[in-house]
Length: 185
Image 1 (tube, rainbow, N blue to C red):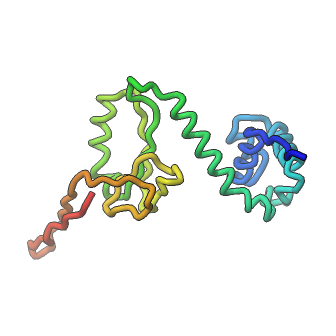
Image 2: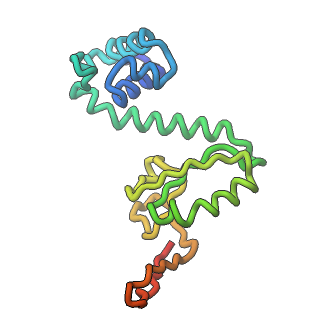
Image 3: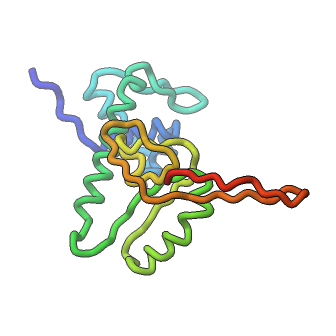
């Protein structure tokens, strides 16, 4: 006997419920009716043969089976997003969305003027800048490009040194300055 064919829309609803904790939140996130979200969750539960959520006054709580499936559905969502970006890209035109992540210093002080220049040259290009000291995992497609001060440790990530960053500190009250610290960018 072959397993039932699962539909991406039911899995999208599953992921949306996981992220929001409710059918109404999932419906808002997906731009569908709450009843549609409920039907999709019920169809998915029927297809896999187990309950994925425990209904409670606090919302929908994932079962152990649902928790086991989270990484798989998140991987599917990242692949679907990558597919959509690649399918909508025009090879001759720099357009589309690039997800860029950097730490606080670079994302606030260094990158904005550089990104303004890029946007002037390529107005069809959208840049989503995530400023966080959390290291986004490029291999899991949380970002397309990461600008970091230190070299990544992931073997599947291509890294390139693009420059050095000079960081000056404010003078002390005595008029002394701290030495310049060079950091690899």
